[in-house]
Image (cartoon, helix red, strand yellow):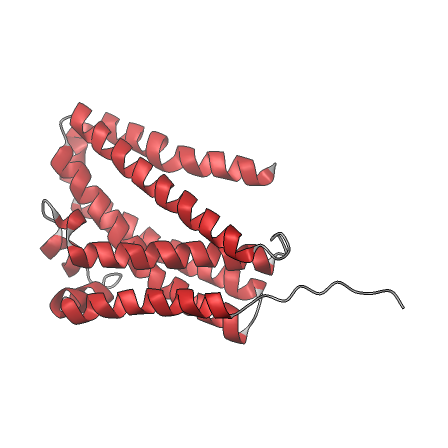
Length: 218
C-alpha cells in the first residue's frame, strides 16, 4: 500500500482573519450608522456616493474601515480560490495569504498615487477624487459578498469552484452597475477631459489587468 500525502489546512488563522474583518465591518456600522444605511443599498440607490462624494471623503474613517475590510476579504478570497484550484504550496498557506495581502495593498496604494498624479498633471484633482471614491465604494460593497463567500468556502462548501465562479460573477455585476452609474453621473464632467479619461482607463484600469492576466497565463 503506497502512502498518500494529505495536506491539512488549519482553520484557526482563517477563523481569526474572518473575525477581524467582521469586527472592522461592525465597527464601521456602529460608529457611522447613517452612512452605513446609505452604503448598504448602494447598488440599488447611489445616494451614498452622491451625498458623501466630497473632497476628503477618501480619508474618512468610515471609508477607510470599509476599504480595510475589502482588502482583507479580497486577499482571503484570492487565497481560497488558489486553494480551490489546488494552486497553493503545501504547508505555506499563511505565508501565501500575507503575500497576497501585501501585494494587493501595495498595488492599490501605487494605483491611487498614480491616479492623483494624473489628476495633478491634467488639473482634474477633484474629478479624480470623486471617480476614485465612487469606484472604491462599489468595490467595498462587493466585499460583503466576498466575506459571505469566504465563510462558505471555509466552513460549508469547502474548495467549491462553483462558489468561486458565482462570487466572481456577482462582484463583476456589482462593479459593472457602479461603472454604469459613474458614467451616467459624470458624463458632463468627463466630456471636457475625454482624452484624459481614455488614458486613465488604458493606463490605470486595463493595463494592470492585462499584465496580471498575462502573468497568470504563463
